[in-house]
Length: 339
Image (cartoon, rainbow, N blue to C red; front, side):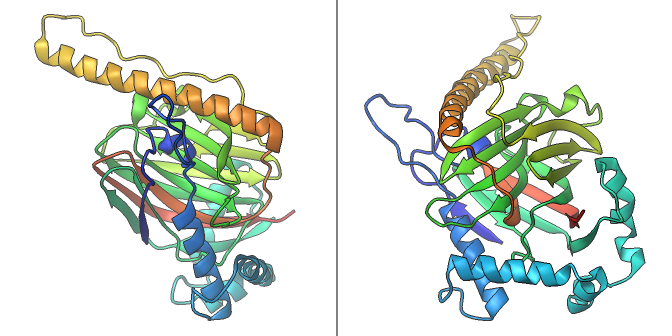
């Protein structure tokens, strides 16, 4: 597991973009936030595991080439891959059976693909202001078309902190290209898809799980199953087996849909309730401003870049606005789709 602190000046929209945002102070430009630490570590880890060299001695091109070669060799048979990682999981149909049974929920034919990895339970935890952490025991495995799923049990001090996945990352430590899907508890839960092109947001789309998934739980210490299905240019997001969003990466960000504002208490004479309402409203106003700013930046960048990525590294991520954020990932697995 790796922990990193966000660069100074990063604002509340980190949970959407994991990149920089405009300054809150007039006349001062803030640096773009890039997944520098994450990307560098991904590249270093992949290189080290693929070539058995020190993580300081490789380069990104070697990491990507060797990781791709490894993935291709794994596709020969699922059994061959599982046997080579017998300490992680047994190469038996019994172990893979729950994955195969779940795939039809996502419109995926179990006969067309193979299980790349089954991950042991992992807790990704960060404490402090504007930090993130990530985990994956199989960083050497890249994926293009795939299903990535995990049960996520969360506890976040701030509703704008959250948990999710990074995927199709090129692991460039200076100008990363990658996609992210993050769940947060804010506004009774929202899911954010972000495309990052050379370190800047180039697509942002927000979905509200409870619109379609009536079982979605936004409270602390609850569990939701997040799944991302990537097939060509189409990315689908599922919570608890229900599709809550679809992204065509060849299309620009749609009109921004804002969360509902907090409801004013019926009894305005209740001081505690009114103070809580004012706090929620202040946070809501701040998030809305950041959503609008990030959306405009992403829309502008998409028109110039067309952020479409086809393959790359993956990881499970926790991101914290402040305080303590804990994301427990259980029953996580990666299925490679092959037509």
